[in-house]
Length: 231
Image (cartoon, rainbow, N blue to C red; front, side, top):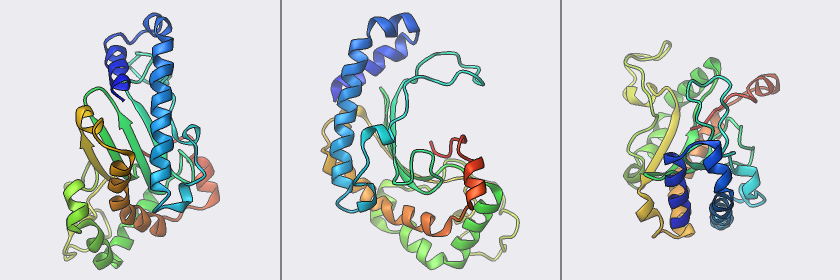
């Protein structure tokens, strides 16, 4: 696994096509190791989430090549390896399991990055209506220990439609519903696939709540297919 981080460090320092083409063999070696890791991880995760048992790395991984069409950053390659493990696919709007390896940080995340306004409002209302169930998930000490915060961005005021008397405003002020555990590459290299799978097992009830309370019709799903919905 150390070779993955070594390659990514070199790539970040030399993010250009000439360097990448000259080191294509090193990229392929690192990518193969990442894929081998995903095979082990999916096998371990399948013990508690049978829906992902059939997935292969190619169903989950993202290309190293960046889409430069609308980005002011014209570096051609991502500085990390990423994979989204979700039975509904990499572009699914339901909660899944995300892994990102970069030279300085390793991220394990779950949840959903983006929803249309109507569906996000419905999810927040589901949290209000099922506040005890939601609280039992996000306040669980085991969950709280690895995911102390829900959402990467938050509103400063309650969203429209939420009563000011709602006892947990922090539950509905998230701009996205993600939870995240991070560690260092050094510590990650000491972890087994089973260790990492256990982190996701702790996150699974959060994903389950999202999946049970996110409803998007087929037409909307087709319109969303090119939107990045997760980290």
